[in-house]
Image (cartoon, rainbow, N blue to C red; front, side):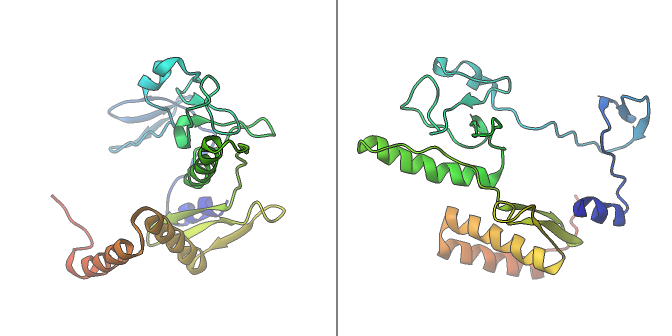
Length: 205
């Protein structure tokens, strides 16, 4: 995709469909017997909920310790417990599960709030349906790429460069406003501007 192409332009050796079997002091060893030499290695192996979730209150969990929930975001064994975000294994009508992404957690929080109110007031609980609004990847100062409106169009609209950067920053500010409010977010932005002037670009210890 576009992110792959941008990384290649920056000189990054992108390996797909390459299984790593071991990490040693020399580097990463692949299933095919190749050694990828490295001094600094970061191994990201997906998500897993904390181990204490496995046996919490006798609730149903899956192999990565997520709590299994119904489409209403209630746990399968206790309808008074609602779960959202990475800790929830939430099924969708197509049989797949809601992906562990920030936008899905945000949407689930909104639906859980509505369903909790409905339960308290004797109303009807509605199922949560994941809406993919697209993805953006920021490659620091080099580039920003992504896709938008995946749920509104057949396929998605690819964006990159300056426009993608503006969209990425806008989404980031929206998340900050949701968490901190307008005044605190404004102060955060002001401090960020000041730090650009005061702080060095690279700091070594």
